[in-house]
Image (cartoon, rainbow, N blue to C red; front, side):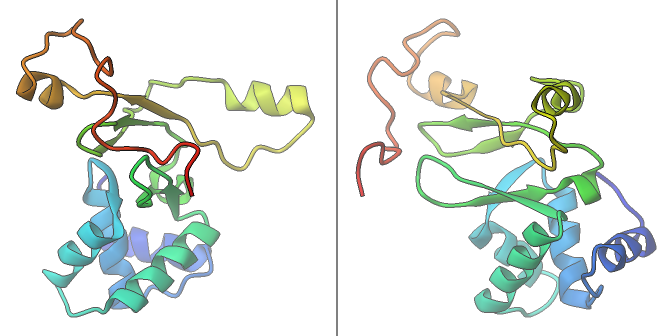
Length: 167
């Protein structure tokens, strides 16, 4: 998503997040990403533009999540991934997570998996967020393993143990 700097600053301010240079840099990284990213990737990209420490980044990400500017998603490798929230992206969206390489892609606009408004109405609830994650094996991992499109995705089990049933 491409937003002008002044529009991004306005959206942050409207959400109660003062548009400081570091916050704007984090928002730009999230807006420029094609996937939900781990904090380490966000930190590296922000550091290309300016110095920032890890604690500051995590505080900004926590603020963005609280204010609806970013979404935090769990993954099978126990690392959180972050992407634009509905206040910046204008829509809720789902994700596809590769159990082998750990890449988490944002599903494209128009790939609505569920009518959130209808579900909210049926529950008599104002739905403020939805988290949908599709787990599978991506094309790159299948190709690297020599598997075809209808190959044994997951038949050998995921290379990344999602920690299911473990502490």
